[in-house]
Picture 1: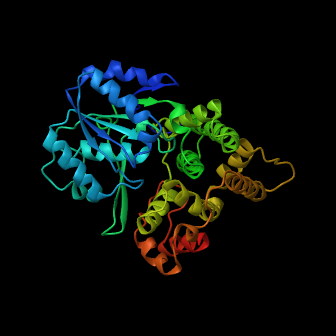
Picture 2: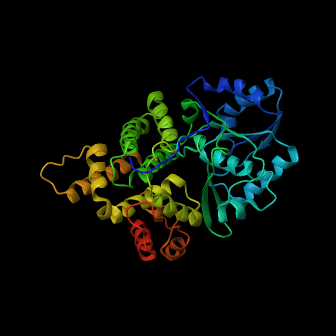
Picture 3: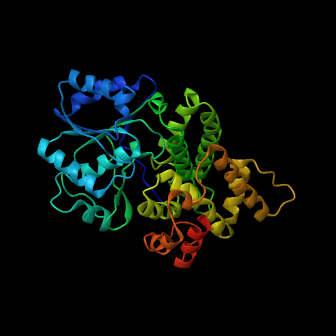
Length: 388
């Protein structure tokens, strides 16, 4: 491994089918006022809401509800959440849901005591919080983003057609997260597979960089193989506990900063996908899936040894008698076949993107330099056009 790094993760994880009971151990550490954050109400239909309310009341907490967090939380919703937190002097932000709820809670946490506009400070100027931070905790109901064990927060501004992520430091990470794989069983299949691809791409974004012999790459390959194996089981039987538990833990490990250590990291698929999402409001994992293959085909010649390794170590491509390029292409074809099997979207046009949006999406795409190729604007347009 080359370079220097530090590693610390501040989040405590409670994992398993009996993990919700540990909420009782954590709640006494925080004040009385709890802002309960959730989405469209599915947690009321599946019983998770009632179970959490019962625990909160048993611990003598005052509950302030903040419902309606959308799959791509908006700056308008963020401002609403900040107002709720301020008016109720909340002591803990408890996010119950998927990555969007966790992302939103972190954005609220750094904004409650901030005397500036949160969007401008954190998502335009990318400044760090200098104010008091309200602690966050998560009860996860969807596996994908890894937001339950990192400092990332992605917020969408429809007015400016921007979807921007800010990775905050360890002081913004959830204090604890509860991961019960059974809580993911009621997800619609499309949401499940979108989350699965989100996990896989998080690993790819860190894997496709660097040329050294890096321990992180070996960990990444094992996680990718786990995602592939368990995903094929889960799409056939969504209530296979072993498969869903593996997927849930894969999601957490994929983005808790471990597999990126010693890596420059790419993240251009996310930049492209988020720009598409800002224009279409499409599901995050599906936007990533739709732009991935055209992007990887474009950068493959610049990182050929890693793409060859990806083909052999992740997809079991037989390398005998083949050129490096042939091997690498077979790896991407195997990846495409898997994506089709699990049912992710492979075209941004299926997500609502049109040809006349391409220029605007390209302009909204942040260009990063950690991967094997720094894209020009024309190359961004080609990737997006090839994704239509």
